[in-house]
Amino acid sequence: MPYNYRTMNNKIIIASLAIALSVGACQSKTEKESTSSEILESTSASHTSTLIGHKAEIQFPEMKATIEYTSTDTLHWSTVGENGAVNEGDEKMSYKALGEDLHFLNWIEQDGFTVSQIINTKTGEVTAFWSYNGADQKRESQFVTGTFRLID
Image (cartoon, rainbow, N blue to C red):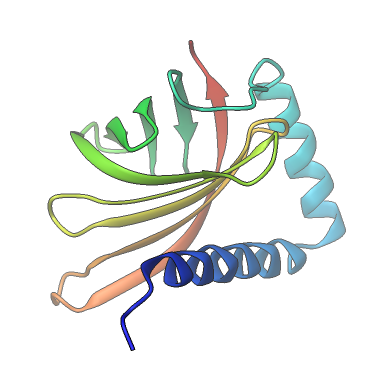
């Protein structure tokens, strides 16, 4: 039986959403209320039904990322880490609008660092899953949350 990439992509998207929703459900009510009010204050002008053609900033605990969504299948990213280190790249991405305010993105960077994101442009919340080679060259992964805001 031939391998069906579309079915696999749908399964990956569904699994990613299930994981993100599960992580969000584990937050305490107080954490959610605090996080939601902080996000809304910092992203009041971020609402858009598409990311394509826009530029945005995402603030994660470890870094700030600036991303240009150049087309439905490419993006340019740059990051500035806590130590001031700057990285950037142009990547082929998978993008799917899950609703008017909800967007799913995935890309693999040149060094194998893999990024999956669910972005809510209405609330400004980003849930990301990162997979990368650790110090011992074994794959490691982590969930991170951040805030999203359009800058053009």
